[in-house]
Length: 123
Image (cartoon, rainbow, N blue to C red; front, side, top):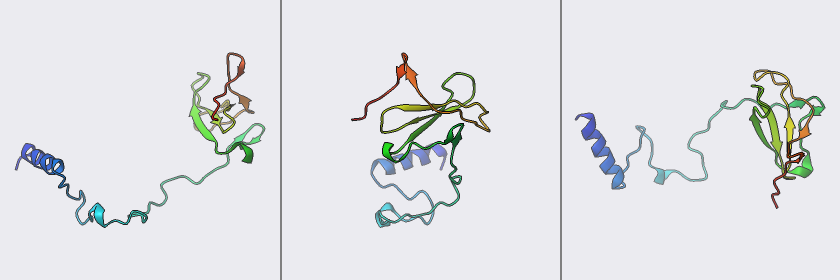
């Protein structure tokens, strides 16, 4: 069968809801228990590290909830800086004084817009 005919056949099966498992020996989704993983990945993430700035460990503290880090070249110098948002609605800016490969973050300052601290109220 040429590729065009195979494509048309597979498209017709999918359109009719008769999808086949994509991997030989794979069970259909109906037989997978939703609360149990079908596969556990290992060693796909680097181990966590504490980021340091000139004034110590970068930590928004327990009262500000979950932090939202964003790595971006904010000042246009070609080196990625660190911006951390949190439940206060403010953004902490850590200028990267090192390189992208070996960042060295300056003491935090609040990100500003129009001469005042930028803030996005969340409540």
